[in-house]
Image (cartoon, rainbow, N blue to C red; front, side, top):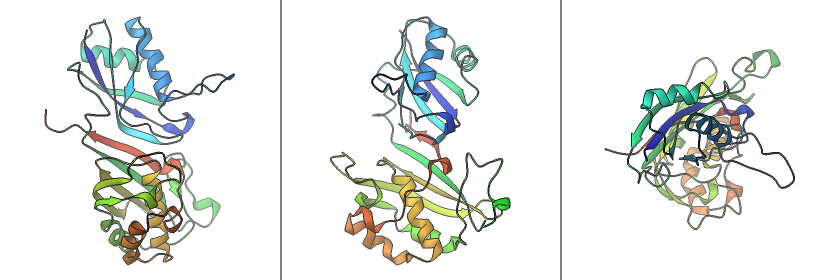
Length: 257
């Protein structure tokens, strides 16, 4: 019985996140896991459970989501990739397929992952706001000081208690996480990107980091306040949770083979 590792990309606007959801008495919600399992089942002609590495939220995108499943069917990786992709809707694609050891777990074996948040700024008039890329680019009308945001982002790097950067009642035993890099840079005209990588993330953590850096860029939070925000471990002292359309899961690293 082979085990297949899939690398996926999807545009998350029309999905209720990655994980399957079936509210009582209602039709199942449209999720990436749900449509992927249907496509794989059609190809291999057996029920499968597709386990995803990251449970992205509603409206969040991915360039490098990783998933895995096992089945009796034996197909060459390229054939599996093409067969599954051809049965998926046009907002999700299988980019690559590998055959991996049966013990491979896309969640537990992950050692590092990276997210990107893209934000258009200083666009006060409706005619200057994102249009054709509005589903993958968040926006704010405010002018932003990008070097100031970059300075603040660097202070998030390291092992910290990120309780200020997740929702209240998050349900996690520990809110200590390690950020390995965090940077802000221009990404076109009146647009910036926030790149964050780490060994693990809390619920809404990247979107709250982005919201806090937005407040820094506006001048409402001083970069030197970041260590204090971390130490307070209080959600109310950090910035807002920015909207999901700007967020994309870029890559997941499993270390050396």
